[in-house]
Image 1 (cartoon, one colour):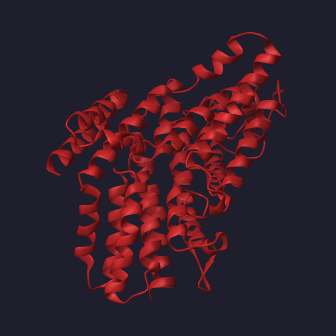
Image 2 (cartoon, one colour):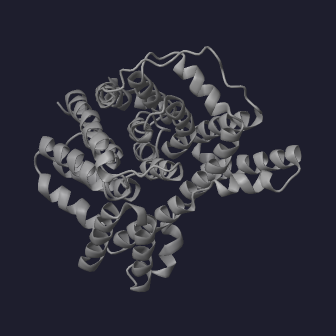
Image 3 (cartoon, rainbow, N blue to C red):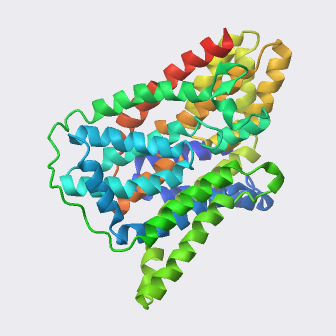
Length: 426
């Protein structure tokens, strides 16, 4: 395992130090994992999350059609007309992204809300970096609020045979939704503090930007509706793992055909496709390969066993270790393979200790979901948001992300940590 750990660690240090070259470091590291045999050829395809890649690619193209229609400008005007200051605009966009993300994948949420934020910042002549980062971390937070909010929530719900309503009331007690919303309230205060200098009033012009075409908006919101429907689909339907990605790409194809028929020129197809950020996709491919490599070499299994050994015999200590170790680990390792590994570990621990596994499971979901907010490359939503800013001409420094992501993570995790133990652990 040592070579895999060293390669993984060195790559992350390089990606954090030289942010402009992250995709190249990640892809090079992934290639090294393959060439050295730490990631066997047979495991390359299973390591790649095609659902995320297709969803990002499809939504990016669809969002470009949305932007060209001038609907984000119209929505920006509507939001600006209803909030008094830049500070409240930042809070409103963060909460708006969180609400959507409770029902739609985090990455899709960022791709849909970011254009509105960019238009607001353009009109107000203010830096969009804190706006986009706040949107990304808020979308990650709300992913644990419902059964359909994030892949990790779906995995845990499947393992425990939980229904959608079990995330609101479980075994007669208020469940994960309320733990997440407690964190969301405190996190909103953090966002409010981050934008404390934005006290300048927003000018009210009373004019709304005219929309050129409403079809891209219909397609985008149609994609949201289909993503929600797919989340509720019963397992008996046997939908493919790439369902969300297929939905987003399918809607993009419909949009491209419509755009071509309307404009009757090749640019109607080429322009939206050029909007797809292949550097972001390359970074994700590299990360998926790296994580596949360390998973194959047993690193994640070893981490899970180490956590189990550290807290054995004391339920509260075990719970605390699971929550905070999950936060730390998920800041660097994709939370999906980690959660998949930890679910059976927790089941075995609970059996050995003769305790209710519920607080351990919920602590795992809370810590693993929120840990990605600690670093700019800890979650796909963060990577996507930073990619959007880069294409808009803004460089995101590590310090820019840390000063929002870390306090946001602590503000969201601490209330959930206390709540889960008091409700399910005592």
